[in-house]
Amino acid sequence: MKLSLVFVTVLLCLSLVRTHAKCTYIEEYCGTSASGVVVHWKWVNEAEGLIEWTFNNTGSKDASVILNRGATYNGAPLVPPYVFAAAYFPAYLYDGLAQYFYGKPVPLRNYQADYDLPIGMLDVDGHYWTVFVFTLAPGQVFRMEEGGYIYEGSNIFPYCQNVDDITYEGSGVFTVDYDVTTQCKEFDSTQPCPPKKFDVGSAYYSIKKGLVNSTNFWPSAGDKFEMNLCLAESNYGSMRKADGANIADVDRQQLAAISQQVKSTVRSAKVSSDKRLKRIL
Image 1 (cartoon, helix red, strand yellow):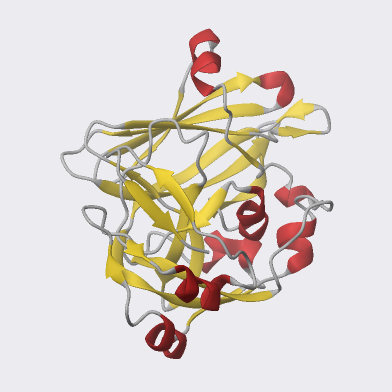
Image 2 (cartoon, one colour):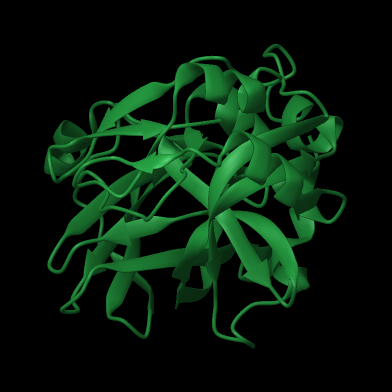
């Protein structure tokens, strides 16, 4: 595993509530988006290199944000900042830690332990990248854990570059071509990986110019994400919106044409609005 990617393994702890109740660590400020989403982090278990991120929407509207962070070691930069999910997104898909969402974003559950996190495509200066999409309702607090903050037996510390708002622009079909070795095998050499090139249905977002650039996606430097307009027209033309959820409800036969290279099942997730949504790979 490359040193620069050593800390990015995402751990969604099933005992998050219990762990939080016992924790005595002080929260450290990370950043605030223009919409008012405030992010903090704190240690859950220093010996294991485990931290907890807290997202708090202090604004008056639903907000979707990305988290751009790196890490320091002995007070010096170690991992250059990059947007969460730029590294290992294919491995997350097979580990059940992430799932591409098709349709308008909806607020996350307060504790996402039993459900994979939504990822989507972000348009940055005409190029698409894969990112975690954190969507919160006004007043909502969302917590998740991340492990791997250890290097050579000592702790490394999160370094927050920024927390940025993103705007939903639509949904489509994308062709993803990624580096299997660096983006999947280095995460877990024992697990299967998606095909090197696959098609996926996903929401896509825009971001205010200048907040991030291609250097903030350096783990994905060798990956390509291209919108497939022909495939979108032929396979997604008859999509309909799910009642009250604004997520595309895809027929299993339609889904198979898009996702048979990756997975052939549709997973259901229960979100904070207590409505069932369909997610597609």
